[in-house]
Length: 614
Image 1 (cartoon, helix red, strand yellow):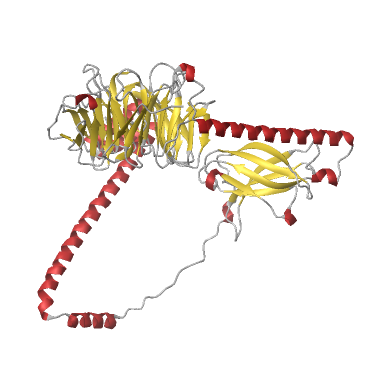
Image 2 (image 1 turned 60 degrees about the horizontal axis):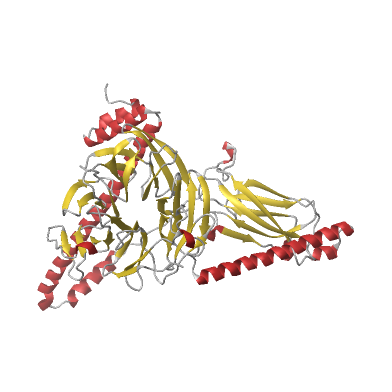
């Protein structure tokens, strides 16, 4: 069982998933986190005697070991790491929707401050492909940007979707890292293979049916992910390694070797306050009465050993640190209550397997004794050659039912299907669906309507209860089928479409006399002494209205600008997809240069012919 080696209370409300640990002096690890007040607090207990008084950093009046970094904007992403290897210490990267700040905590100075037109929704720091210097890679509105320690824009590409999570992984095993991220509207994970500054290509693309909330690199080509429906798992490139689903939501995920076995476990902080560590074969986890916010790796307050730090919100913000278990405790990291629950669960599984084995033995004895009868059917015994068939079709619907895809399940004999359980991602609420026909409608076949929200293949895991009408016990069949990508499409005749005949007709009754009478009555109700106050009130009301209208106009303009920027980036991406190799990257770079110089005609020409020259 793991026990905390230190606990620290905080006086600041922390924004979820915006936590980083860095060695800002090159030696001591310090915790940095974004607060909900547009600031970044830096906890450094190793320099309690130092006091900062710069314009950007101020000392916390309540805590001597906490410094506050004033951003004056809502922080959208946070990271720490080596940006300039020559300095010998880490830099702090803070992103907002308009700017990126690279801050030197040790010297209390800005490394660079750059405007980011596409916004900064996610940030990751490290080396990428053949680019030798570390980059701060920013994911924004349909674009990825990479900045070096001087703020030079060394990497830029379009993604076709807003980026909200980033991770660096070596997907192809060549010792060079690629960048992967998750999209917004299309819940996808994409990876860019960077060959050099001028040549980059989309390496792989994995589409999910739920919103991805977090990504983290594991080891090799594996990465962990968390979905909005409580699913947490690991992918190896485009192959799912494992996954689990919980009724709670994963607040943060992180890879860490907690049991010292040489393999990274996926550490998950859940919305119900539990923190779990899971490998493909050993699940375990200490539980807290708290909600995890971020799970960075470091050795806060422990200068020799590496530890794992948990941040929690309730009942008050705070930090707990845990040392990884030694090798001899590899199998003893579970809490006592967790061990008991696991033993109880395994005992229940053993009992179920014994009951199932006994049923199989009774079925075998009944078949050897002679032909089956109704009495045998009541005990759940069915012919040994019973098979189930599953087929997909498209139902164009009718006046009472909309068009849908249809799954037809049937048996190979006179047995009936009593119930069907379907487990699938993204089709049903809660990822499961049960069909239980009434007694008078039982038959050897059943049709199940399905309406997938997206044109993607979906794996269906089916469990069918098969028996006879008088059965009290049923045989369970399990099948796995894949719903085709375009299962909602059917070939139709062009002549079948007819012109709509419906229309809408309405009238508006105008009564200007009533409106004028109401106005006159209202004016007569005012006293002459209140006329001046009324005028001042109306002026104040008009001024407030003008301010609100101006704010709405700016908000609408900002929203429209982001949508247009997204459309431009998507158009550039489509223009690049029409080329292969270096011409593709040359088109993307030339389009971006044309946008910078505000040369629209050149931009159109580049998209059409691939070059700006005539």
